[in-house]
Length: 560
Image 1 (cartoon, rainbow, N blue to C red):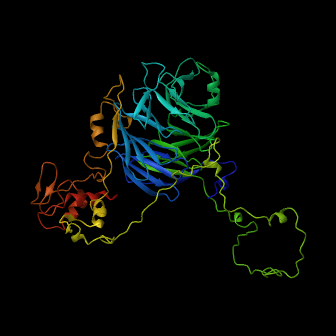
Image 2 (cartoon, rainbow, N blue to C red):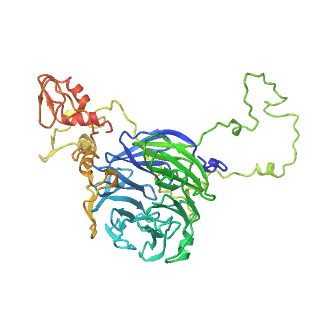
Image 3 (spheres, rainbow, N blue to C red):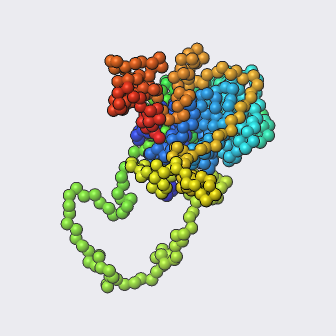
């Protein structure tokens, strides 16, 4: 598809709802890859659902964590995905295989993580009540970034557009600009309100194009700055924001803010309701308010990198916002006319003749002469929307799409190997040793499920003076953490296969009820609280028998 033809000439922001993406589980966070072809969604049960955004279908499901996924970020080439869960675990995933390459265990919950925009070996992590941490994946080492005030550790951080600098902000409104390689302080300034009062920094977001970035603060104002001016002012500078964006009528606090793909618009999601406010960056005027379902709270917002499309999450569902597509038939043929009824067509003289005998051949000049030139149809020009300003070529190793294997309803049993009953038989060889055929050796892993995967290396990150009893904001405040922490996520032994089922089977007359809630006898589906479906299936078995646990897991999971 030619992205140059998607230019809408002026209006480049979404106008209306364009459907939803149902991840089966409760969605909590989402992020697009660099090209907008894949959308990764982190869910409440620890799964990461990757959507093919062109077909709006699920391309892959990774059973990533046991607890809810709270933050996600793609690598630059799209091959890796880094995720954080509410149990303080940061994991690195291979998107194609779904394998976990590395794990990092932190002492406190992770508020945000971000892949380095250019270096695939660095990840920026923002733990709760701690200074930001820069991870190096190759040697599993970490560097704690310097902060302005050791007593104020409510710090947020973000890479700039090319990863040369790290911007950090604390609860006293102080912004520090650090060199990524040396962690030296390059520039700093303080965000103040109308008077000398300071305001806490909630988030820092950079545009994909240009040098602008925005700061979302606790005083409900979004300030837009130019990164070049910040570096020019140096330490303890006093830069003026390019724009101040706010809702003067309702004084809305902002949950999540981000730039459009071209950096010309800014969208902010309300923390009170499912409402998206869109401003034009150059002028600072509010151009659109998108209202979702009343009574829902917004969790996350992501703008598509190259199209005027926004994905927002509320009540566990991903909502898509796009422009109203109007069919313009004149684009296919300039002289096209829409008719209310059939009209008899009058053929012009020699209109459908193979050769016009009466036509005189004029001399070829200008554009006509250019038609005889040979057109290059083999070389492929790079798509400008996919290239950065300092790049000339696209990344040809990038992962834009995921291959999807077709689902076969009735697969043949072992079509290329020995029959199932002969799989376990051994044939003696001439030297007397037992030998299982080569086909059996190759197909052995698939008969037991997935092939054996290498265990990911887990690194524990030690941070000095960081409290270990903190609870992630997604799970609630400290007081009610005990009740909420147990309900969120999957049971520890489920391995990502079972879907939490809210119902337990009611015992029939004559059934035996065990202390853990399992029901046996009378055809009930026992052994693990299989739910209504397990009870119905159990009724088909012999009286008093139990449905096997492995069968029930596959039956209930639905996502194998």
